[in-house]
Each structure stands twice: as structure tokens, then as C-alpha cells.
Image 1 (cartoon, each protein chain N blue to C red):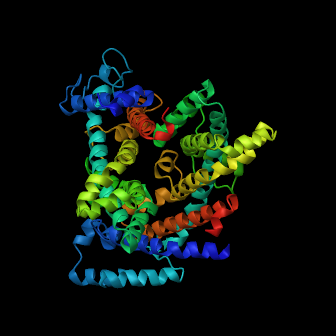
Image 2 (image 1 turned 30 degrees about the vertical axis):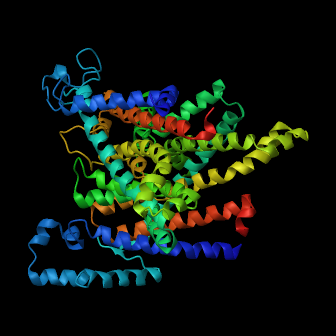
Image 3 (image 1 turned 90 degrees about the vertical axis):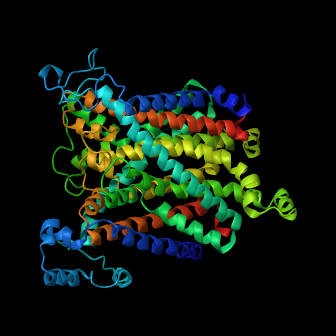
Length: 279
Length: 319
């Protein structure tokens, strides 16, 4: 087993975080193929099935239409994870490329690019997301470009810093002297130095992306009813909260645990990669 | 000092210009325009060409985009943020109706976060891996992972079912009207935001204090017989303050932009919900004005942060 993997599994935060993330991936698969106790959108009109508290029949209770909350929470996983994973993947590729090239090229170009990144950074994130989503209309995937745009500058900053410190080193000059092309230097010699900080940022960005997605769908801008999304289930559950608190508790718990998982994983990765903290 | 701040202000100008361009063009990508927003899509579809042309001329939509932008900026520089056709009031009036609430919420939330986060972070760093340290680190992880709209919802649930109290059920009471009832309405939203942010403060404080405590000057301070409290609060904390100030500044910038979700949960009329509603209603003038106002606040907060840097660390202003 490679050394990094061994250290990662030996780190308590990372191990717990990884376990939660894997659990969520399993939940997403179960939800995607509707391998749930009940069909997530099936209504049970009998009064005996409506607003039932958590128990043997309905693990997390049922809502006012007699739908099983547990099945809906499972189904909701796929929407949240898909938005988080794709948006962060785009932000990672775009941001890392921008940051690395900008830092490597340097000079006026670098200043200009980072200034543009500052504009996006200073722009209120949730409002930018709101504007993008309202341009595209509500839908299960429309949070993706919004979140990607918001997190791209963060990756640009994270990837640029190690490039600046590596650029002036002699092995880069040596590579240039033997006639290596710029893009090859970037990939072979500069990129490996940016991998660790970018990996940590990916994990943390996934936790923020989950929160943002839940927030947007809480505002009604995510997946549309009757499809379940955690944010929307929470919002709908608020009206009946006093008599049926489970409607608001379980979707929120699903969001929180997912965010916690990525946070723990990010913390663990940072401990493992940061030599100053290594014991 | 004045030159330093002036220099920083000039450096922020391109950012402000960039944001103004971004907001101007982004909002025009949203389907529909000021006419459909004012009349409704159906009525706007039934306009005769002449009526439509008259409306376009009235809203200035018949001019090229660049000219519309130039005219908007020209008026902005004279302090005219435009007029909200939907709310039937000047944009600045709408902003200043909601901004006091946002400012109050921001100040309260930051206070709560600092009061909770700083001491716990310091104690955590002085006794690493103790029970207290593990406890506070767990709490801070929880604070980072808790969606604030869920935390707010749970607070309302507990307040109403256990304490039979619903402070935010009625109309919002301003600070000037009745300070006590206002604080009753503001405390829980501020706590929701403040608790989440105290987690970041706690973690940063712990990290910078841990690093600072291993420095040579700390050993010197201890060996010349200073009390431990002086060593920590005067010598170590001051050196750890800069990252904490940076973090608080960024958070303050975001909070001044409005907390849409928490405002929504607690039914507070802040600048976040104002902007959110304006985006949904295609209220161009209001969205543009509000976002630029928020961005300007962000820049002001950054200036304040730069100023505090030089107060805490005199080496900064000479650079």
C-alpha cells in the first residue's frame, strides 16, 4: 500500500470522513436505482400512512402524502452529490489551470487574471448562484454552473501559490535549459507541487458545495417537486414541524452528515500532507 | 497612513468596475426584461409594436447596451442608483430600508462568534489534546457542518414547542421602535450565524496559537518570569491576530451582503432577501444597485482590515 494511503487511513479524521463519503456514495447508488423501501414519490392516501412518526414501517416517518421519508432521503442523495461532484470537478479543472498558468506566466498577465478572479471572489457567492440559477430557471442541475463559477477563483488561488514558489527553483531552469517545452514543465514539474493543496481544497469545496446546493434547493431553485431534494424537503417540512418534527429533522441531518464527512476528510488530508503537522 | 489607505482604495477600483460590468451583463442574461417584469409576461406579449417601442424608450432599453451601461455608471457617480419600477421607490431608499437590519445582524453575529470562538480557541491551544480541546474541536466541526437554515429551523422548533415562544412570528420591530423586542427577534438569527462562524474562529485561533506558542520569543517571555496569562494574551495572541482579523473581515464582507437563508427562515427583511426578491422579479435597477452596494461594502471592509493590520503589526504599513 502506498505510504500516503497508509497515513490517510491511520488518521482518525480522514478515516471517519472517508467512511461517511463512501456511505453517501452507496446511498446515492441506492437512490439512483430506486432500491429504496418504498418508491420515493409514491403517495399512500390511507390516513394510517400519513404523517407517521419514525418506526418499523417508516424508518424516518412519513409525510402528509404518506410518502416514506427514508426513501426520499436516499433518493435526494443523488441530486446533492451530483451537483457537488460535477461543480467542484469543473471548478478544480478550470481554477487549477487558470491559477497555474497565471502564476507560471507571471507579469501583467498574471496581475490581470488574478484581478478578474478577485472580482468573482468579491461578488457575493450565493447571489451569483441565485442570478445564474434564475437565468437558467430552476432545475436539478442548474446549480452546477453557479457553484462552479463561485469556487473557480478559490482553486485558482490555491494552485497559484505553489507555482510561484517552485517557478524560481533551479530544477525548472535546468528543465528549460535542456529544451523542455513550457506545457511539459507545467505538467511534469510544477503540477505535482500543487496536488496536495488542491486535494485538500477539493474535499473542503465539496462540503461547501453540498451546503450551497441544499441552500439553493431550500429556496426552491433546485429539483422540482415531486422529486425529493434535501433542501426542499426541509422547507416543506417546516410548515408541519410542530406536529411532525421528523419532516424537518432527517433531511437536515442528511445534509449535515454529508458536509461533516467531506470536512473530516479535508482535515485529514491536510494533516497527512502538511509536513509541519506530521509527527 | 492616509497615503497607504488611499493607495489601497485605488487598488480596489478595478475590482469595483469589474463587478459593475459583471452585474450589469449577468442580469441581462435572465430571460424577460423590465417590461415583462412590470406588466407580466402575458400582458407584455399583447403589446402593439408601437406600445412596446414606447415602453422600450421609457426604460431606455432601445439604446445599445454599452450606452445603457455608461449612463448607469454616470448616474451612479452622481449618487443616483436608479428607480425601482416594481417597488415604486428609488433604489437607494429600498436599500437603506433593509440595510440597518443587515448591519445589526452582522455586528451581533460577529460579536457572538468572537466571544465564543476566541477564548475556546486559546484554551484549546494551551492544552492540546486535552478533553476540553477534543470537545471544542468536535463542536467546531459541528458548527462548520451545520447548514444555517437547518439550525435556524431547529431553533424555531425548540422555541415554539418547548418554550411556546415565537419572537419572529409577527412584524419585524426595528431597533429604534423597541430595542428589547428588536433584540428578542435578532438574537436567534444572530446566534445561528454567529455559532457557525465561531467554529472557524475557534479553529484558526487554535492553529495560530499553537504555532506561536512554539516560538522562541515565547520561551524568552516565560524565562524572564512573565505570568503565563501575560505570555498568552499579550505576546502570543497579538502575533496570531492577523489571520483572525483576515477571517473576520471576509466573513463581515459576506454577512453585510445579506444572509438570504437565515433571513428567510426567521422572516427578517434584510438586504439578502431584498436582492433575492429583486432577482426573481427581474428588477434590474434594484439588483444592480444592491449588488454594487454590497460589493462596495466588501471593499470598505477590506480597507478596514488593511488598516487593522497596520495597527496590530506596525511592520505592515511600511511595506
